[in-house]
Figure (cartoon, one colour):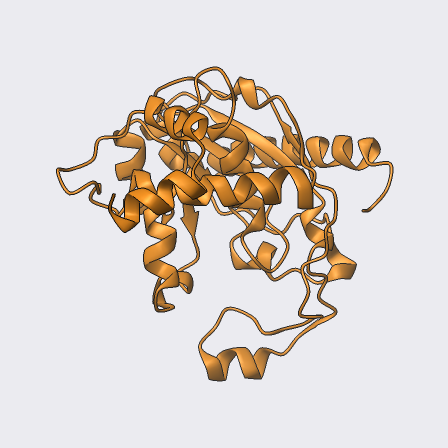
Length: 271
């Protein structure tokens, strides 16, 4: 028995292995797709994330079955928590559902691929550089894609601004229209409290070449996370002025706000 086979037998339960094998991905003979996705890496990551999802953050997910079983789809959510925990939990919720599981592709900040080792690891578990060209290729490939339109404005949010949505860009709406991809809005509650930041040292962030330098405790708190998935939203691809595209973006933003409020009302305690 090879070392890889031995580790896999110890770390990846047979049921999980079979579950991931059910999810078809177009990969090459070496086990990778053009963006670095690797099924074996996903299995190891899935096994670890299961513990984080169920035991540490005790995630409550409602409506994940609303994400279409196939075809291109954009999963649009509020961003928070300094680290991309929200994307990890949304991805696990979709990949672990019993009926029609899918492994989504998450658009990540440009900073992460520059970090040695981390960038490759994120690629192997399905993350892709958050670039409009990459997102377009994912949708053309009938992928489910997680996008956070707030970008670093959301992930670098300070604690006193929690659950206040920052500006959304229009790029995701243009792609949804072009590729006839439904948008499934998601309200994430709980990640704002995992790594609460009280300040952002902008000069330090600029000097280090990173998006933000938060002042926060070096601890990830086990806040209970609520994920609420909304009904798919469909938008036609007729040529319209940019002002009307912005109006459509605001419709999605309003629905995410509603789902956030729903999660906050459901939350009985922080931890």
